[in-house]
Image (cartoon, rainbow, N blue to C red; front, top):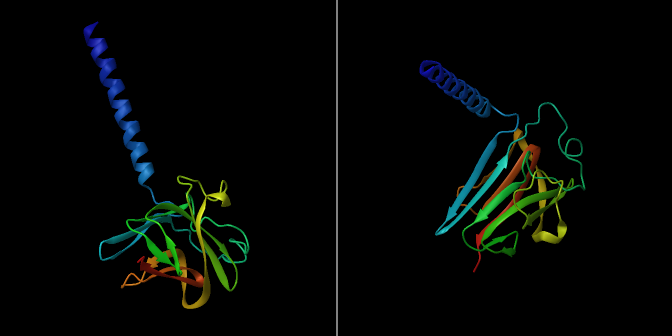
Amino acid sequence: MKLNSLYIALSLTLCCFLSQTAFSQKALEAKPSPLNVAAMKQGDTYVKVVYSRPHKRDRKVFGGLVPYGDVWRLGANEATEITLTQDLTLGGQKLAAGTYSMYAIPEEDKWTVIFNNALGEWGHYNYDEKKDALRIEAPTSKTEETYEPFTIMFNEAGTEMIMAWEDTKVVVPVSVAA
């Protein structure tokens, strides 16, 4: 009887281990829109942007997949989040240190880039304009190359946050707030 109980306990432990291993491997598989981080440092100020990178995949992105004039999550999956360790000036306007969700309203000639106080949002479905901390407008420009995945990056000096996808680029000037 003791041997039977031991056998059952070992079998259950093995089953749990194998199912956990399979689950862990599945969680590590490549996602269609993988998670990415863009970061920059200016002096003691650190900025981190966490976002998912959807891919163009032969689709018309702006004015198609991402309609003009609608709020967009600025990536895929969860809403993009930005964390600032000190106050920054973005596009000429001050944003207090903290963590914010980021959204955009793309247009052909400009984007409205939104920093919102609601965190942990999936996409833009529960976006609430009343929770906006800051809205800035940034002009679009055409790129020479095609950006297959949506990309957020900072220039080497950390003075520009660049968002690019397809053949569209938006640059937001960044500086440490005085």
